[in-house]
Length: 401
Image (cartoon, rainbow, N blue to C red):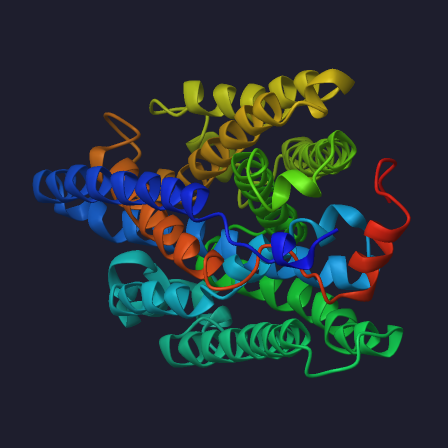
């Protein structure tokens, strides 16, 4: 196959994605600004939700990128550029974290000295939950994640330029970062989820909370990647490489992660509900009352039952357009999940989901997609110099990995 064809860039598909991101950004930010003007107290949680959603996409892309380097599967070879582009937006996520730092007093009650002094539990947690250590930990998290991203990205760019030998030894060095990087990512993300989300209610805790967020980020990035891949599949160069078997493999992986997320989430709920401890059950009581019950029921149906039933279909998983619709739906449900995680702490009466809580995260997500499309257009959509990719073309790729 002509290498020049495989290294072309689908400018039409990328521009289409960029337009969608720009429309979502404009509409979302306008609606969010109106909502924040009408209810100023919703600005801080809305910005936190937007940050949480965007960094979930970027870190999920980084995790899937490292996972692909470890496994070498065809599912990741055809979508590697998507994960690389998403991971390269970690600096944008760092920028979104600055308002969260500025609004720590509005978001976290443990940041108020008078509140801590009057609460024995918060006094015991103060050596960990304090503003200075919170910022230091965040700096460490971002430094490690961006080191992994920049290293893998630099090596991938060198491989594209042909500056290194395209041999098994070349692919092996990606695993030097990816193997420990995956483990460190899970550990640091577990800590970050405690800092940024679980400590919104510093009296509540769950030992599986961090793992739930890790799986959720992987699901967000995978669903987004499938949707983008389906958008690019009808045109060059993807039309020469993508087969129904690739979407079938990606659909099966998405089904597996949907089931894993549901298993972890239900395990957390069941253990806390059975324990019936006063420091644990308020988390779910807040999300089953004050208008949040319909949202909770929607999440149970939309995050598990509906995608589970749809993704059982082999025919659906082999049809890119249908699979993409399920994927976009999952991305939307993941955003609603992030709102559900954060907002009940601040909005326990009246209308549970406000204009700001929807508009600002959608707007920031649109900016993320717009920047993602820019990054995606900077390189060839296929890693043609990767030896695994050449092996895939040489021996055919109808069966998948």
